[in-house]
Amino acid sequence: MTTASTCPLLVRLESRISELKQKFIQDQLEAEADDPSFVADLDRLAAFRLLVHAEIEEFLESKAEEGLNALDSAFKGGAQAVRANLCLMVIGATLGKPAKFDAAQWASYALEVLASARMAVKENNGIKQASFQQLAVFSGKMPDETDVVLSSALNAYGKSRGDVAHKSAIRVRTIRAPSAELKDAEDLLMGLRTF
Image (cartoon, rainbow, N blue to C red; front, side, top):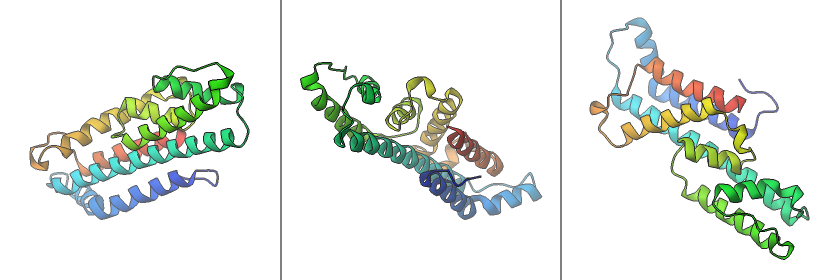
């Protein structure tokens, strides 16, 4: 469920996952409901999982870019005081770049942190816990605001995505019934909505 205040990136993610459901598993969901002993198409379930993962990863990266762009605009627009940019110090710490409190170096430090964070987003490869936590900080969350349940769920989904990404679908043991695959995706969406 989206509301008028929901971000456009989340609306797009929800729409895209709905499209993937229709394209890859809707008929399998119906067949499963009619006959619990039916045999699902593992390739289509694997494709659904891979593509849902890719959409969530793109969403998280886009939110991070959105947050970094807002920080950059504010900083370049004159909000350069350390107090107004504590989040840049948190981002710097996340990236292993300790803050420089020398007033003469603050501006260059802030711009260096923003550039490094943008590079980290470009080089991001996944939604597992470390990636999620870093992207969440880039999008404006503080480390203690990271939802541990969502982080854990994303970590598990990232691992299961790796399972189908690196093996033939017929050899993967983590693919489950269409209803279970859909529930995983919907649970992640719910977590992202509330986060």
